[in-house]
Length: 455
Figure (cartoon, rainbow, N blue to C red):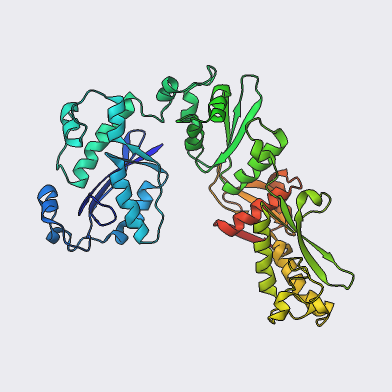
């Protein structure tokens, strides 16, 4: 696990009114500093005299310093996938969150406070301010009230707390949580900070929980730390073995988790057993030859595979409404305007009159079939590639003629030029699953990925 130890200096104590004047961050992994960043920041306003007296930072010193937006990318980079650490962490964290908010960016990290945890892990000190605590513990503190000096001292304090046992380490889990005797604490150290699926087993080797994460180590550890709900505590007590599988791909992890929950029906995955695709979008041709679309609960259409699947009816209606507007389809023929006469869109001249016979089936269906191609991922054949390599192989998901066919891994120095070559690398053929299509469609709308199309 990585920890970004941070300290800032500011123009005042209120993050909404104040601005950052200096920042320093040290990135730790396994107790060693692997990266660092330090810079004065131009706050774009005068520094109050009492702040200058405290920190020694003057207006002249920050006049030519970068503004926060100029270092923002570096702050994101060095703190990515790391726990944000500071002495009185809320102060530093909230200032940084506010600076990012002014730029329209949401900055969010897990937090660890050396002040609060010092009180818990090394009790009995008269003062827990950084200066006094460092003096008591013989931690060297140079340049007090300057970001780099305070952050470097906080690094040494954090290392000391880590030796005692910080709350997300196995040695603290052993003393604070009710772990099953068979669950070896060293197992937590073996779980990587990569994307994949994880599995919890009881002492009878029954699979009791399946989950997925883009950071397996952090997510698994979270199940065993600071839980109060009865269900979570019960799962902690029953888990005798933890296994995991790296997928390299978030999409593959989502697909595996969904399929395996339905297949194995683990005790603590009750919500996941239910279909994610409760509503579907379907098509049919009416007696007049018009292509119709309609939304229905998937449980009512057990034999029909939906064109698209949705977790709730509102999402389905919202999607269909966008399709109607994009292709000038008739609301009545799409099942969202129940009337004997013309649909509302025809009344405002957005529908060309298929609902009252003013537009012929051939003319209307030309646009309706274009919409159908759009809805069905255009019946294209392609592979989706995203994430990182696993055992020097690149993950991919294959969609053929708009239908999910499976996932696989390709040697990094190879490329695929045909569907037939894809099948040679697929691990397991896909099982027809409404949820799989819903997962792929949602992923394609929300995530970044590389697509390779085939004829």
